[in-house]
Image 1 (tube, rainbow, N blue to C red):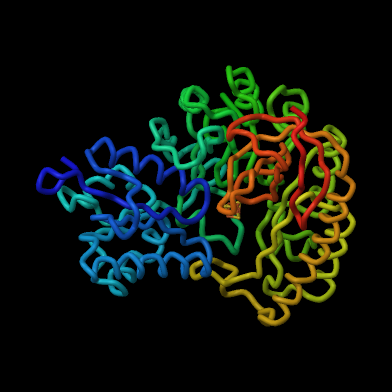
Image 2 (image 1 turned 120 degrees about the vertical axis):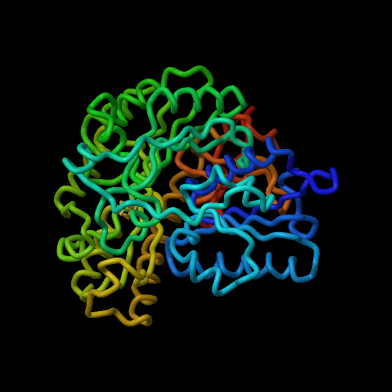
Amino acid sequence: MGSVHDKPLKVAMVSLGCPKNLVDSEKMLAALAAGGCLVAAPLDQADVIVVKTCGFLSSARDESLGVIAEALDHKRRGSARRVVVAGCLGNRDAEKLYDLSPDIDAIVGVNDRDTILSAVLGKGPVSRVRQHPPARTGGQAAKGRAPVIASDAGRFRLTPRHTAYLRIAEGCSQRCTFCTIPALRGPFRSKLPRSILAEARELLGDGARELNIIGQDITSYGRDLDGKANLSTLLGRLDTLDGARWLRLMYAYPKRFDPELIDTMAAASHVLHYVDLPLQHIANPVLRRMGRAVTRKETELLLRRLRAAMPDVTIRTTFIVGFPGEGRGEFGELLDFVRDFEFDALGVFEFSPEQGTPAASMGPAVTPRTKARRAEAIMLAQQEIAFAANRRRIGRVLEVLVDGLDSAGRCVGRHGGQAPDIDSVCYLTVPRPGGRFVRVKVIDWQDYDLIVQPLD
Ligand code: SF4
């Protein structure tokens, strides 16, 4: 089926954006391979190039458009026959994309991953990108709830064998005024617990030891399942699975991080004391304008509870600076908060007005220069905190999961407080095989990273 002149079709996929997008890419690659295509071909040797786009922020959109242009260049030069655009940008700008690049052969939206083979082959129905119905919350959600999401089992894995992303939900029903995700990926939908457990068993059976639990807002897990499950009960079941060594929580929403969940994390055997908890800001007037539905007081109470229940907990967060109306005082409050609380890892974004979001029409705008200055001030404060923490780690013994050799030939691994792709790493002085858990001693540090010596 996936062949031309009886030769298997060679398909290259460039997967951009977040781990949720990556899981979709892995599902698509599995469907293409099952359809007889040769997947993971290099760009310059591919018959078909699939660009799995991200449309979250304007910077991500620019990156996606750049890769699409590169793919179309391969087509113009005759090395590729078809270019397929998939992912969030298709949901956001489908018509514009066709106008911009009429040579695009097909666009596959975030809801249409099952049509990828038809799109690649150029046969059969290629649906117009299906837009989502508007997000629904609370009672509305219960009454007219969106269907649960499909299983991601049977993926063609793009991550190293020992680590995998386990998506437990899709979409988001929060109301953050700056965010395009509810419009792009639809209302919040949980995956059924039995489906998640089956996927987790499959991934563990396939050699994964670390499962990174993802969604847009994992702490809302189960809210659409008639109270039959929540993140805490789900974690309790995942924690009993054979082979599960590290379970990591990513993309938590502060308002829904309840004491039950904290207790479950603290008591579990394999749930890492790690949480990725984007806070976006801390000043109440800004939090209100962002539509975050959480206050400074509630945020601080949550953070205190996390550290009280798990003194070794690693907390990663993200902030936005330069949100419309962010005054000098509000920014100062955020900077002081960063200095006082000392997060383990932190990212900062300069506000960018995204078309179609309420925040895009809010004012007064903060100038680009002020935004850049504020972002730099936050990162400099965080750098001091991170470097001091690394200094304090010298001499400590840690457990590290080895990821393998990086492009410079260095052996790289991560301790439990380091998530894949977004956090700092550990460099091993003596190489160890990828996928192995190794006891190490911290002997030095280099910027945000650690230099560690294997003890076994
Ligand atoms: S919780 Fe996250 S994904 Fe959901 S609307 Fe807010 S920022 Fe967007």
